[in-house]
Length: 112
Image (cartoon, rainbow, N blue to C red; front, side, top):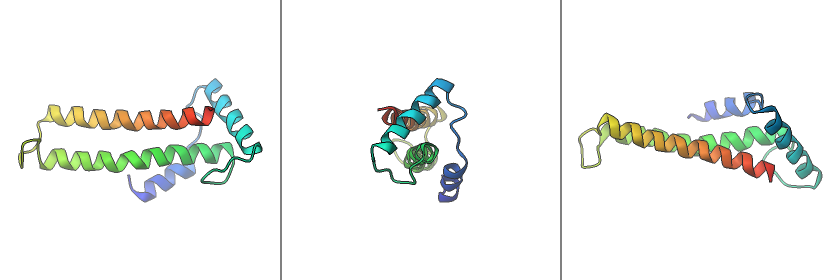
């Protein structure tokens, strides 16, 4: 994902797709943390903290996924032959699963 795409995600992402109870719990937890004086890497509103956490997780894994796609297309596991489609599928599926897990971890931290 490009820096522009991550920046756009940071500016436009909402909590709307989340379950209403999860959204309320995250907002409540973040408001409590803000009131307690916790330090965040962005302006301290629940939505901005949520956007920042998700965009950091996406950015961290999107570069890995892009590299994996390039590697699978250029070189297979044994050398300069392209990887089989099935190998590419499983490698990319694993990388996306790790990205989703990182986002879930960010959400869990917000609830802590």
